[in-house]
Image 1 (tube, rainbow, N blue to C red):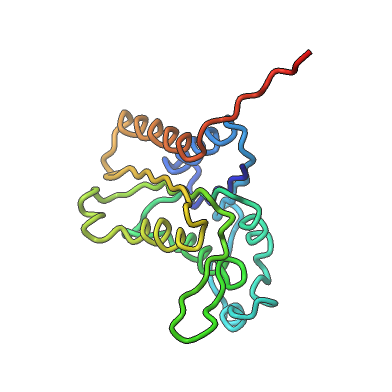
Image 2 (image 1 turned 90 degrees about the vertical axis):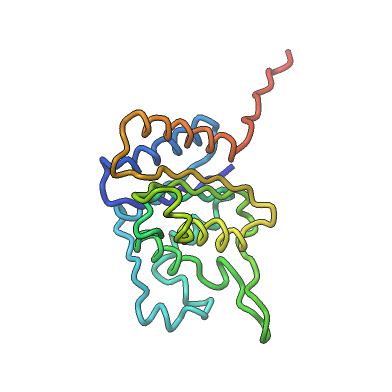
Length: 208
């Protein structure tokens, strides 16, 4: 297994960083090959320039400046997002990553005729995980429609493998969360990661 973790938070002391560490530990202890994309730490530019927008449909040009991100996306078979939910959706930095990296010819194929939808190109991704935190309550988030969750677990999943396995965990009401609640959530995240990646193959003993 090869897991790409896309992490988005500006502060290293955040609870979201603890969620990231829990995810990474679970993956590594299971023997999964991992890569971490830390968008803020790497200084990723989420803004689509006029040039990038002009070249968006040109598969010979639309990878310019994001070659490393696309290589990591094509390398993985497991894609995991760790981020805070702001205004019921994805942080601008993470939304910009989707806008810039999931380009035609990489993430999907453009329609060939009128009335057609895009075709999936991320069919090598068989596992998709989303781990987030929310200031709002569960019921308020769901009443609004949880747009961040829908973008990833519905929209993105449609261009992954047909039977792509998914995992989701969110801690709600973060502004008043106490330590016990946060610790319990980290345990839940670990269990979700373990279930997402499945049983760890047992090493066979050598026969003398």
